[in-house]
Each structure stands twice: as C-alpha cells, then as structure tokens.
Image (cartoon, rainbow, N blue to C red; front, side):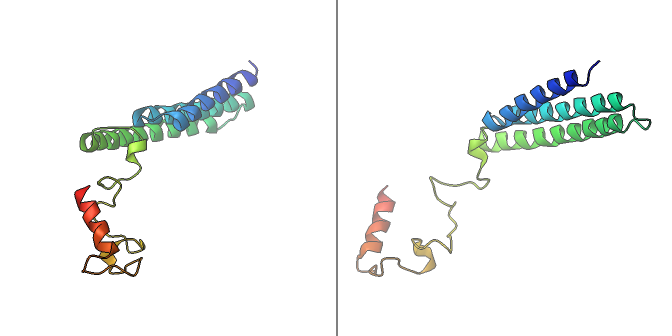
Length: 146
C-alpha cells in the first residue's frame, strides 16, 4: 500500500476537524472536532511507522499515548462543558468568552480603574460633573431610568 492513501485521508480528517473547531458554536462539537484532528495525527503516526518499518514501533507507541491523552481531554472537557451548561444554560462558545457573570454589557458590578468614564474611581471625564446636577449626575439619572 502506498503511503499517499493514509496521508491524504489524514489530511482530509484534519481539515474537517479544523473546520469544526473554527466554524462550530457548540462546545461539544468543538471537542469532537479536536478528537478528529487527533485521530488524523494518529493515522499519520501509524502509517509512517509501518512505511518506515521502525523496529521500536515508536509511531504506534506515540499513538497509544495520544489516545490516552485524548481520553483524559474528553473526560475533563465534557465535565467543564456540563458545569458551564448547568450554570449558564448554554454551551455556545460565543456566550462563554467572558467567564464572569455580567449584567448587560457591564463588568459585573466591579469598577474598572482604567475606565475614564467610570464614576466609581472618583474622576470626572467631563470635568463639570458635581452634586448640583451637572452632566455626570444627569448621566447617572439616565442610567437609573434605563
């Protein structure tokens, strides 16, 4: 058997896995795509090991190591995805970028010291806000009514 057949199959498997990692939104499908990529690597390792007639069978031993690593990765990955799904109600990757619970666009109640528009740090970006109803107080009233 030619070495090109398993190599082409491994490239196709790896490309399908890469597409799944980049295009999917569900975390479980992303984990499955990573597994496809690892299996493509395993196929290459075994194919090159057989083609070069390695006495130590290092390609096959690396393949066993990757299979054990993939089993541990999928177990821990699924545990994390299940915990996130229980806490958040979704396993969409787009919704999981920020791990802290946040309100609508805010920082979860924590003041950002680098934010110049944050009134909690004691600095007024406009320089005209005061307790008598300046622009800073008006913006606070608008946020409270929203």
